[in-house]
Structures are given as C-alpha cells and as structure tokens.
Amino acid sequence: MYGLHQGVHHFNSFDGVQSLPLLLGQANIHTGIIGKKHVGPGSVYPFDFAYTEENNSVLQVGRNITRIKLLVRKFFQTHKDEALERRQKQEENKEDRDKIKDEERPFFLYVAFHDTHRCGHSQPQYGAFCEKFGNGEMGMGRIPDWTPEYYTPEQVKVPPFVPDTPVARADLAAQYTTVSRLDQGIGLVLQELRDAGYENDTLVIYSSDNGIPFPNGRTNLYRSGTAEPMLVSSPEHRERWGDTSQAFVSLLDITPTILDWFSVPYPSYSLPGSPRGPVHLTGRSLLPALVTEPSSWYTVYSSQSLHEVTMYYPTRSVQQGAYHLLHNLHYRMPFPIDQDLFVSPTFQDLLNRTRLSQPTHWFKSLQQYYYRARWELYDTRADPLETRNLASDPSLSAVLESLRQSLQKWQWETADPWVCGPDYVLEDKLEPHCRPLYNGL
Image (tube, rainbow, N blue to C red):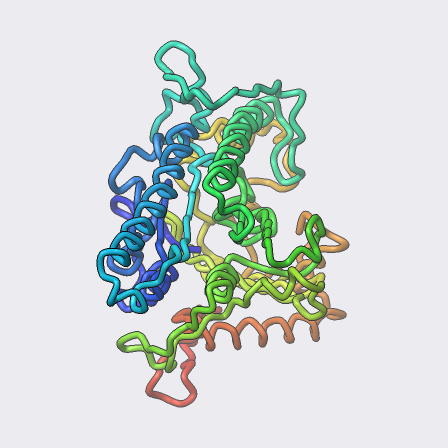
C-alpha cells in the first residue's frame, strides 16, 4: 500500500518508475483520469485528460456523480473529436493517407470515486462520510443525478470485525448512504460508455484501494483491511460472464492485465541505485482467468509501511491457501491510528468504552489491537476473523517456516529494503547481505 501523497505526507514513486499511464501514453493510447489521483510525481503519472484533486475540488470530481458523469462524457467527446481531426487531416493530405490511421486510437479512462472514504477530519460539515454532501438539504447543495438512500442503525449489517454498538451502526449507516451514491455513479459512468458506443469493445475493471475505514480495516494487512471487490468484464471473454472465481488476486495484477489487453510489453529497465537488477512486475494478467478457472493462483503478497507520514509500522504478509502469515517488523511499537479514523464516531466510542471499562462489543481489546506479535499466523478457513495466532503452534512449524521463506523470497525479488529487519541490517555489498544487530529481537 502506498502512503498518502498530499500535504506533509508527500509520498512519491521514484522518478524513473515506468507507470501504467506513462507506458500507455508512449503506446499512443489516450489516457484519462477523473477523481482521486493521490500519487506522484506528475511526471511519472501523466494523463492526457485529468480532473483530479490537483486541479479541482475532490468533492466535485470524486463525489458529485453528476459532475463525474459530465466529465466522462467530455473525455469521450474529446476522444471522438481527436479522431475526427485525424480523419480531416487524412482528407487534406491524401499523399499521407497511409501514414495516418483512420480509426480512433484506444483509450484508458480511470474513474476514481472518493466515496466511500471518510471526510470527518477534512470536511466535517458534510458528515462522517460526506453522506450529506449534495443531498439537497440546507447548505449541502444538490447533486441532480443522486437519489439519496438512507438506512437506520438497525438495518445495517455490522461486519464481524467492527464493534456492534449503536454508534458504530449509525456510522455504518452513514457509509451505506455514500455507497448508494457510488453505486448510482457507476451506473452513470457505464451509461456514458454505452451512449458513446464503446460498451462492446471495452474492458471494465472495478476494484477498491483498501478495506473499510473502521478498526481492523484500512491500514491493516488483516483480511478485513485488504479484502476488496474485484470485478472484471470483457466483451472478448464471455465464457465466464457472471461467474465467481476462487483465485487469489491483488491490485498488483491490474497493470499486467491492462498491458495485456492492449498488447503493450513491459519494458526492461532499472531504477538508479537499485542493486537488484531490472524492474519486473510481480502481478499477473487476469485475462486467462476470464476463460478458465486458474488451478494454481493460491498465493498473494501484501505490504504496508505507512499511511500518514507519522504512521510508520512496516508489515509484510503472504496468504497461501488457508494460511495467512503477517510479519510486524516494529511489533514493540503500538499500532498507529490515522487522523480520520481517530475522529470517527466508531473509534471515539471504542476509546471511551475502553477508558471507562465498559463493554466494547468488539472481538478484541484495544490493547490487543495496538500491540501485536512479531509473527502472526492464521488459518483463515477455520478462523476467518483471524483471532487465534498459530505462530507458536508446534504442529504448524513447517507451515510457518515455509511461509516465512516464501515471504522473504518475495521481498528479495521486489528489492524490499526491510527484507532483513528488524534484527538484521541490509548490506548489499557484503555477504551475507543480512548482518546481525544483536538487538535481542
């Protein structure tokens, strides 16, 4: 997971990274982004068409679904206008007819809704999730294409990793309202795709960036923090339309999938100062899974070092079949809490209940949440909530060691600077590369 890009957090990719929009632009593919960008530098992530928080209000380009609809329409119109201009140029320069293609060039449009993120820290006047933004009430403005849907605390289904309290239920109900805005917004985007005539030749991918912003969710590498929707629809792969796959996939697979769709190869290059050789993608194209169910996609890796700049808590994990292993490198530190979760009604209620020694109606204590073991091993089939750490179970020592080796191998392959921590230091010019610190860990 990337850290935050905006403000003091200033998380950026290396200047030499060959990003997806950069590679697509070099391949003469028209690129566009609408909504939340949250990544930099701009030279690494260039888009031909861009309406993001960098040049607009994130509320308007990320939550105002009417504005988003019109921007999608504008992107398709500029795409068609460009093709018309090319055809007119052909007619004016008949001698160059063979040099200028007659058809529209391919396009890639990234629509990044800001729903269902919290906004109680940044725009509290609109509610904990900006659920009031554009609902037509006094001072809230009105989004013409949105019909707000409201839920009572009693109606919501509380995820098992969230405290089941009246406060948390009301918090979830507010998020449900923004889910309805997101859902209606996606419908508007897909309708624009149909109206523009691209429905039958466009690959559509829908996913999210992390788990929900509740305790044990976002910023955690537990399944409750990394489990995300992944829907892929291809007009050229109808064999499995409507099917559900059991394959393990991740956001690392999106770039390889899109490059595969456009038949764009990933270049061979190295980052300055990297001792690990050429950069390579560790994800895989999902297109084969649209034809037949993969038989060996049962391993997925994840990493997290920080969210806000003050939230340093490096964790690495591997999920292989039923078993999930997490390595908390700085396990003697308390797990950090981000600002918008801290001010949320759910977390404040959890804090107050803990402070007053009242029942929290949560599946773990706040102390257990803050302070974690260095190694956490869970059997997610028998224990989907990941409550029983099996790392010290002698009967699973072989499983633990196999997963540790698999995780470390992936860290070496991805040039992870944390590969030796926390009890060793990485020294690339020495053999072995991991040198002991004798720090008692």
